[in-house]
Image 1 (tube, each protein chain N blue to C red):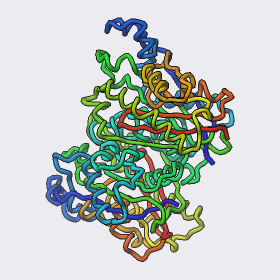
Image 2: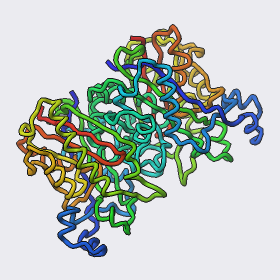
Image 3: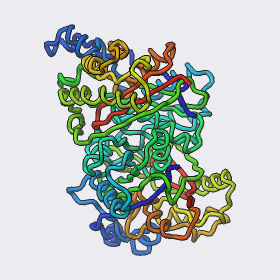
Image 4: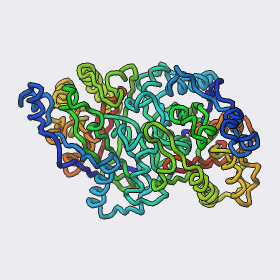
Length: 309
Length: 309
């Protein structure tokens, strides 16, 4: 059974001081820390492409996983909506070449935003099992710096560039349990790109998350015959401090402190936010069962239970 | 086990007379029929978007499949590299809304070109099995009319717009057998979009197909313990008449006439070419085992065995 063997990431060292940026919009430290949640927003360099972020994350994964050999990789999925060039070819093909992976790799991109990691986990596990593959890389890299208008106060204080790489294979530490997904395209206009610039209706997205995510997590637990107390931690998409706090409070009977919050130095990294939490808070923990939930562009959402195998 | 229950398609009635277009480039009927293979190239209307092609194909599938109910759909994958808007949100979310599908649908796009249907079959089967889903739609829609320069003689005579919809579920007529995939991103420059315009190095792509596809099919047969005579038909991507003919001839020990060729009224429809062959030549046949192979943008290729369950 294919599960999660390891996770690594790449967060650019350079970036934006979000206090300084906040001051430009008359926002004080209380707002930046309490509502946005991020003091620093990493930014890819001018000479970096999305595929370069993928390569950095994958190389970090190789460095952290001595048993993982390049020549053993037979599957590569890149989750992005801001890939290289103009989307043709797919970024995964470019990453295959830049990483020096063998040409027998099955590679494609999945187009999803902040829900992308949850979908991506089941897509790569399922694809690998259906096609009989053994070692997969699930990469997330969605650098919103490409599309965010630095003058748009609704978005420029939120997003950070990052990439993550997840090694999927047999005999994994973490296994995928029950999952649950959803899509509401009638909300597509709330998060979209027009003429190369990202637009977000923050209030609508906040309301969507608050209405959808706690209920979705409860339904997932019910269908899994689990109680909130059976879950050691909730790793939900780090949209903003306000969203994580509001979802945690709305999720009744749970303890809000079980909702991991960690975006101070990264910002909202889109589909990379959940794997960053898993890498930095879950993998070396004593926890045995965590819930994940991603939500955003589409509108799209997905939640799942992960457990130690 | 999830398999292929039905396939339907949408081919726009309007389009381009390829003889007239050929004349513009001093190409006669022998060239248009013998090398290109398409007398007519369907074109979407100015007021149609990629999602509209998807909706037409899905509605054709609903019409052809009385047992398939909209409310029973729980998975939707759109294979495209020319989706709606600017790729954010994903086209699948827009299609979910336009089709009036329930919001518990798991929906995402896969970014792949002419190899996309083969990958898409295993991706949707695997995702559905991993996530416990029951009725999926695999939609292909990659209207190259959006990106082809009508003055580029290397591409404008080749591509046609179309969309297909495949119903995936239990108790299917056709099951997915062994598959084999590959990617070589060093060939990415041979097929790419720059500044919104598609470029193809035809000679390189032809050589790639001729070198790769027959060998790949032989390897797949070997790994499946099958001989060429065990395969009733080969449904390979309809890149051009010249490519299909050359691959069929190069594939030794096979009978070239087993390679289905049908692009006269459609052109090269990218990821829709293989499902169009399956719909029009395989589903109502007495054949019990066919091989499929897609190849193109990436470079990317994938081959698989389909068999009656």
